[in-house]
Image (cartoon, rainbow, N blue to C red):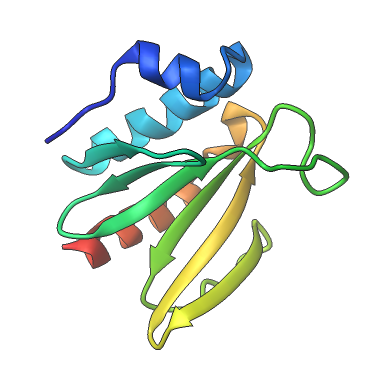
Length: 125
């Protein structure tokens, strides 16, 4: 599985140490669930198996719902997750939902988020 270098991750997050740390925490959680490839694009870093199931990106604007230094974790599920943690859920294809979750602190990566990551990982196989 393809893994990104620490240098490319730091560059993607414009060397913002807090965001790099948040990303690395998400990366560790995904690794604990199973093997996944990593792909870097212009605006996001994605994780996938047979298909991509998680994306991490920086919001263009900050505000009340997206605090300074946060990152957004997007997960692809086969259902709409009913969670207060999901700030937006859309169904781009029938039976394929994407969920945006604001991560501003490593404490945000709790058992609820782990369960959603596991579900997304399983759905990607």
